[in-house]
Image 1: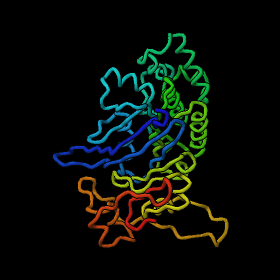
Image 2: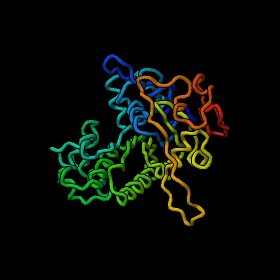
Image 3: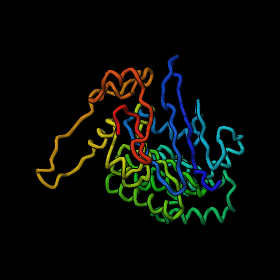
Image 4: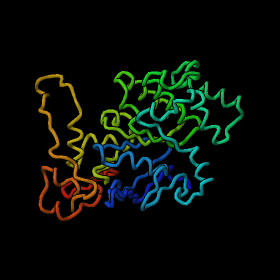
Length: 318
């Protein structure tokens, strides 16, 4: 089907059993992602962003709902079929050093996925490794180094090269710049942007840095306590946030005022995120929301359109 999105997530939920209790990590999340597009996932720690990214790749099994990649329900793939499909879906981890084998050289780590997927001859794989090192801005000599011999920025470039080794179509970027210095972050962001244009990559970009999400993303989805509270194009969502939680997140972006007239007090979000073991009844955000009314604690708001392509789950949005 020509209009089939690259990735379609339908009403996906993921729960974990912890000492006899149920942790609600992701609840009924749906979205679509086309080739060459970026979906930004934002929310506080514990909102379910990383879990959702792993469910989309079937690194974690969904408890409910469907994940359809390239028109196929990945939950129905056999082990062999899933391994073949993984060539097209990769991940860049938050901690590059922890995600690399300390006993493998950089070149061997990048080549490893190609070996597993049976891609090319040894000479062809080695040539491709050199090409990838050059493309991500590393010298060819880095291929003979061990991960601990490289800087944090270089390690993350290795993680990117490894993810691209099998020429994927979808890459989940799980906080790929949070552990890096600001100057290195800019380099990695520009690299990801350039690679997306060259390879028509689709990204799920997970980050706490809303400025970066706004810059990189075509669409943005805001998660709170495992649930989507707002989603829309990056331009619409940042220009006109409709959910109170989204507004607080955007207000938390540090901006240097150009004049005293533009100065404004810092606004904080009161309280802590409720326990995912016992989510609140009604709107999950109502215990911390300044606009909450009795209706919010009794009735869960449904996701609805507040503008073309802009959805929010708030009784008072729009």
